[in-house]
Image (tube, rainbow, N blue to C red; front, side, top):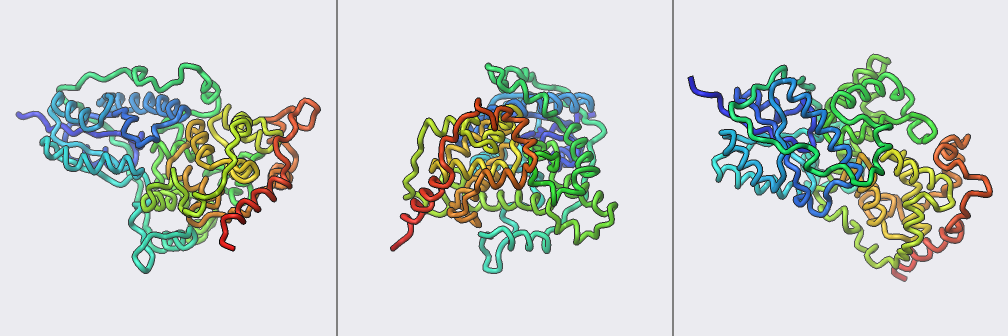
Length: 458
């Protein structure tokens, strides 16, 4: 009796067993399964995972490896380039096909496009699947056949046209090949920083598929009910905190969509009601970010509105360092940056306020703030990070206008009314020990407006 064929399942940002189309298709083919992870930061186009993301990736791969081993197929870890690693693994195991779930960042797309030619040339069938989004970035088009420039019409089209399919479960068993290639030890990838600044992250997060599912369930049974009113309050546990689990694919967006729908329908909402709710709007914003990045691949580096190439940024290095360290003397901003450093996460309302202060009051280029978030956020996602920074800076599609400048004091009074959030992260605020503000909010606002006015034609 001949041995079963062998299929490589190439894990990327889909670190889960449930609702994983590539894994399910490989299993259904009847092949023995060789799960593989290839660490290839040089293929990320200048956007290799930052320090916080690497910590998360290390812990998530630990969990994925354990779950795969329980089902019979150990995870094999290699270094890139991806094609070289996959070709070598096929030769070592006898694999004849490679299955993977698609990514949508420009550099990742380029890698996949090359593989679709290189793998068949090397005698390997190539199978890719949609997994990371509810709809692929090119699928929705305006009536004229182009990409959406504004979120609200995209959201309406999404609700009208997208039908989210059923969630699939985890395979009960994964038969391994007779020849399982040697794996690098996870520690050999060097994902954990040598200086353990990340040590506090473990006190705030548990990476991995099982923890992700528990977090989704807890949110759907708790904070979801008041999400629309509490989502802007950093002093309350009003958000889902599912973003890193979604970014690393420990949860599929289809799992989130389905669980949210079940929870809201049990609470009495109709399908139309919950689908038009605030949390679904945030899920669709994530889809919109990928849509924009697909059509504007320079989004992480260049302003979508080219006029802003001429804006005379100040780019004061001392002020930028103070901003990164949470030492601006402006309590809500400092609280957010200190929360970020200690937990790898910052409340979204505070992200907007902190970004506004940097870009507008300090007139510092948004790309530097984007890079800082990329390195320190556990949920750093190229499309969302770039779109959100360009939104605040007023340089992107459907962005807040540049003259919309958040006042941190007003924002604090509205969204942290009792000061609990600021006291937690900046306990010295309001005392003589607290730093004086590095910038006057009123005069710096006017400076930003005057600078913006200089870009406009007379």
